[in-house]
Image 1 (cartoon, rainbow, N blue to C red):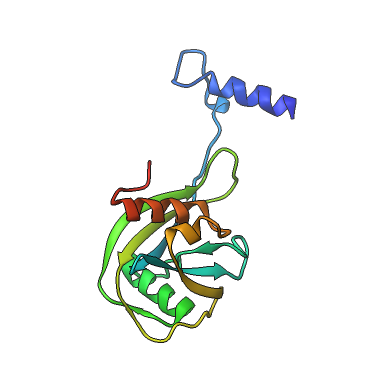
Image 2: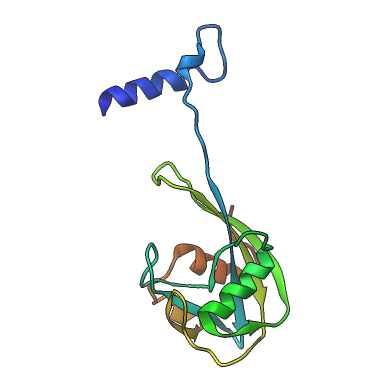
Length: 167
């Protein structure tokens, strides 16, 4: 491990390019970005949340959402995921924020580019399905006590306060 750290440190010392740097001192890095969408439905001061039924977020509450499918727009994905996970169809949606999740130095893996849509109306009979173990409507105070993804709680706080998630 120490040798790896020393080699990495030596490579980093060559940035930006200086006369002593050689191409073999650089590490090729590839970052994978996965496009995803979620939908925050806020009605009468309560957010619609699903409890994730599968890893990696099993047992955590979040807005309905998931990965974009081939040829799908972010809004189409948000609507599809909402319906698949809850049986509900969204009314008007607007893109609220695009958030990059993951990809930090502590986490191996891809970056999820999450398109968060905000809506205030849904139609249908709610029923947890697909990868949702359960669903419900929760106030911000109730959300504070639930096991949930950090990004969902941060987004809900920002939506309620009329702001946006800190960059």
